[in-house]
Length: 356
Image 1 (cartoon, rainbow, N blue to C red):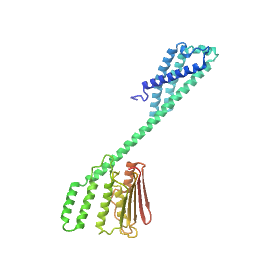
Image 2 (cartoon, rainbow, N blue to C red):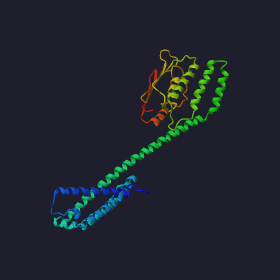
Image 3 (cartoon, rainbow, N blue to C red):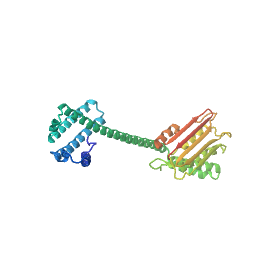
Image 4 (cartoon, rainbow, N blue to C red):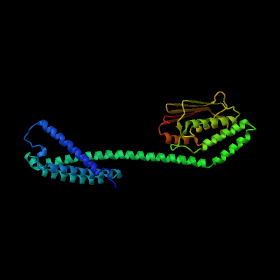
């Protein structure tokens, strides 16, 4: 591991803080107890040396053990690797306790109290187990938090790559057609058709607007277009289809709410609209194709319903509903619902985006 997860200076500050708090609490408790025959701990033999030794030992002990255990967790090592580290920790901890007792005459006090070597060893074992358990627990919690953070970073990078890939695919499709050639050609045809047919010139102008929107490449980094432009694109598609069928189509479009400033990923609504035109009975007086869009408190709700066509169906050449599902997932994660009801005679699509 090139860099230590747990920094030495931070562990030193933590140990200094713990010793200081312990010192203050002990003095406070001693003052409440009153005078006794027992000397205050800070007047005992070698107190300063033992305190400095304790701070130094615990700092370096934690620095080694926590970083070592962290590396083993990251590398997902087996128990034998942990056993070796725990053995080093146990030996060093035993040496520290022994040296502390020697400096503070702890063994003499134990003999006065008639404590057997077995009891002293047991106290060493309990002290080591408790301290090591806390050390491992803290290290494991930090490891879990780091792993969760790393997964979140990887998921974000994956999402960004998917979005970039989707944009690249869209730009590739756009690049297959020269937009300047199309605009110039359509404008030429529009100008030439005006003297001959108002309906034809209107159709050419509408088609020009459709192509201009479809080939535009000025979206911001989030890949979202203005909702009002997307709705206008839907209106143009409806208009061009009405011209194709001499304004005999039975299509209703209803828009509610203040849409100014709202943004949405492009070509989602139009995909649903085109799907209704291709597979729906667009001339039914009893069951007209219905589109309804409502924007309320930053949430968008789009509804499309059409009676199914009974004759031959057109071949779909759009990006398809499966594609917009993927794009919605990438752009809005879990903040959307796309509900499709494919019934015997009717086809209904409901799209809700809760945070545009």
